[in-house]
Length: 395
Image (cartoon, rainbow, N blue to C red):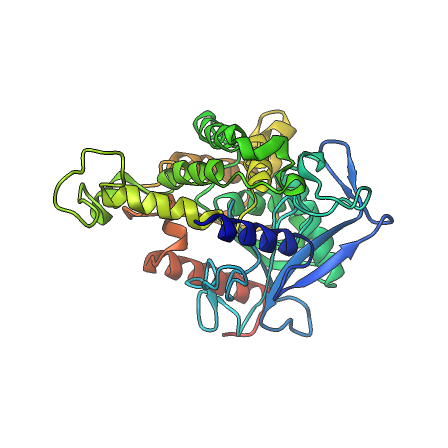
């Protein structure tokens, strides 16, 4: 990417941090701080969000969709920065499993993100400059607390469902633990109740790639007019490998050369898979903030629901009234099925209502974002059953 294009992309991201386009914003003043796990009160702060569909008269059909690490509020609408379709348009929309003709769908950018909710690229009201590393470290629980404040603002007492995959699935589980009386049903997909040592290790490699970029400037790059795009691109490349399976990589790329029949005997992108990863890295830096990447990966690392309950996961969901549908994928080695089974076992021990599905696929962790008919059928069936149980009108 040309230097001028990089500066333009960074300018757009900086603008979206405070004044996001094509969405709504709710601002919370000094009288309504967000109380963080770190002991800090974040105030003032804002949340950017999108809604789809109509809230019914009983306010009983609201579905909160939680996004993954690099997602945002544009779950089923065109992204204002990239011009691409919503990140879960396969799942959310008219007539789709999360049917916007039946449900009122809400999706917010998480606190710590970079698409309008308060985060490290937002303007610090005390200084008038981007927070950078002065922004407090946040947790998954902090994200959910902020979402609960948004739901209060919208006048919704109880959510019909909360759904999400990966980091979104962590938020789903946190909702069920923190606000069980406010969530009728949940769909945690391709996730776990705590981050594994291996996943923490992968995240640390990505963070070090960002921080090793000389243009990172100790997190002050927005103030100093630089852009750690190389480090962030490498972090994205490494992470993207973990979202796919070996079988998917082999099926999609194999060992095929990129636009050539023989090796160049150089360090150009000889192989198709190399070119693909470079594209993933370069396109990512157009829409995402490097410091947000540090903050959100750290939030995932800190996630451990059982830790707050004496190390016993079942205690986190004891006598929960919430209905659960836990979903995993056979080829997901980032959040393997064994971790989903641990959730199910804990829910059974806690006396919760839980169903479980392991979907056979070679698409890896990212299967929850892709065209996976069995996933669509399971989500639709679970929500239909939950809707009947709650007395929602048939779709």
